[in-house]
Figure (tube, rainbow, N blue to C red):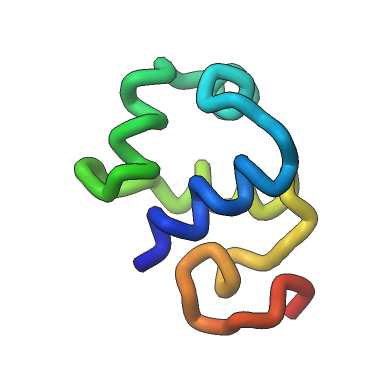
Length: 69
């Protein structure tokens, strides 16, 4: 499930939910729901997160285990 990758990537980059929410220009509570899988994350935000974490959208969505493909 992709939401697990969201929290793992954030933790690996030593970022808080607030910092990521600020980057995405959204509320921290909304971002927290994305990480918990309670709310579907918009594709535009997944693209921004892939840029932030220097990885692919496929990795975030769990379609590959290679962070750099």
